[in-house]
Length: 150
Image (cartoon, rainbow, N blue to C red; front, side, top):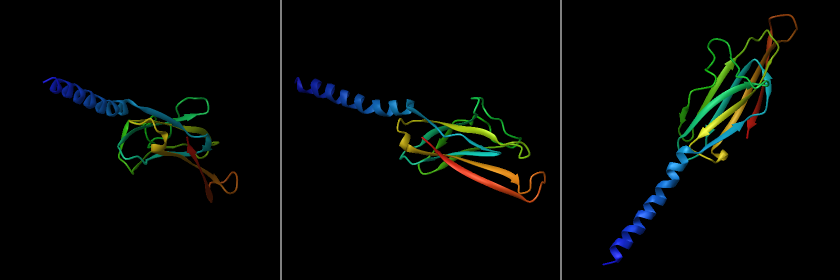
């Protein structure tokens, strides 16, 4: 007779223990930063390489720590919270005036539903558009550089 209540208690503990990691995983977060780059067009991207859907929010900052604001048509900075399924990529893109000196900046990526930074791959791709001959508007060369965030 005593074995039924004991079995029920053990089953209850096992179920409660099994429910805890999934609740914990929904609250888990990791933040990843890229190194700084200079240019007139910034693309910060993240690929979900995990087996579950992750929440991702992007922010692009200047070296002064303030949020960068691109030209009209650029994405919102910071981005809204994006739901990114396994094996897919999300990004934010900001464009600046190419006639002025390049903008310096870095990307901050907040990833929710994980504590493992290895669940995402983060890149900052920056383009720098400039004339081949200074003081002219054409022809133009576009340089690109990519760094990874950790």
